[in-house]
Image (cartoon, rainbow, N blue to C red; front, side):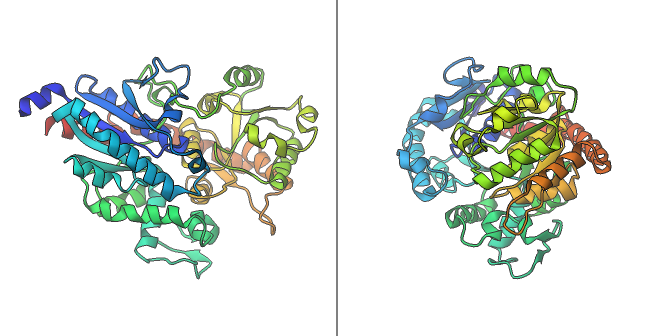
Length: 461
């Protein structure tokens, strides 16, 4: 029987939380896994029907992306799509859909299936896997530092509300309150999400692997600490290969996009600009800034006197100041969505004004683009802390007494990053981390070795 199993190879089920920021890194990890042994490793990623139907036109077929098969799950009721307000109900629906689908998937593959890799917030996935006698491994989509912060809160090393203006934790830099994840710094915000994160920690001592979307050198001290606690394997950055090591020739984009990018418009506009002259501004697929903040950003961009490319989702366009686009047509381009990796990789881009989601942060690090951080919620304030004070690849814009970032502050940060003395150091550090990110996933790099070891463990055990 063992010889038959080896001949058939290993089948891996990947279960992401079905939003863009969680799907992309798990999909990229799946591509890396599949590339290690295309004869023996097969990947099935479980995604809701609406997600499966938005594959980029670059995908070669309706249900395959770079040797990763997409298995459709039914969409949850429409009201559960509203951000994270109904996370408990959403997770309950997703669990039912996965539990219903697994028997058929496993039956088709019989003794071939070896392991389930699940988004760490899907804490029930380990129990579901065990019902079918499968091994399972959680995948943490944020930084290792955020993982450590949540664990210290779970262990009551720190408490909510924070009683001190600054927090010192093992293996981490000293944090001010506004450097902490928003679920901690703003007590009572999204308690269901915090509970879901906490529910995953008891599982960490019951699994053989825990995957984290980072690389060893990026968070060296906290990575060492985490490895002393759990079987953590860093496998990032999860960026398409053609933007890093270029070993996977067909891996040029993520393959999924919630919105249609205006790629050609962006490309032609950037082609007409000088090297390192453009400020790129984007706040991801979820962030919704207030009108006052949008106006301040608009005025700050205008004051900087730099060319800018600003991604403003269609639902957010109404928040722009009246006549803004007409008044800045000589300097700026506003689009409703972009191919972000292509933009960041363009030689014309010299600065990225970002909300500092982990995906956007690692993309900028991997492509060597200096940042101006304007974090909004979740892990973004912590990522911004590292951008400015640890990796020194950007500046974090300061908020005023109203909690807003003024147009003057935005102008100052852009000028400092692109023109000032500090900007020279930031550019040097950005280039350093770009090279280290590439080295991590290149042949023999720390992340590449962790993926190789995992595949060898599955195929040869």
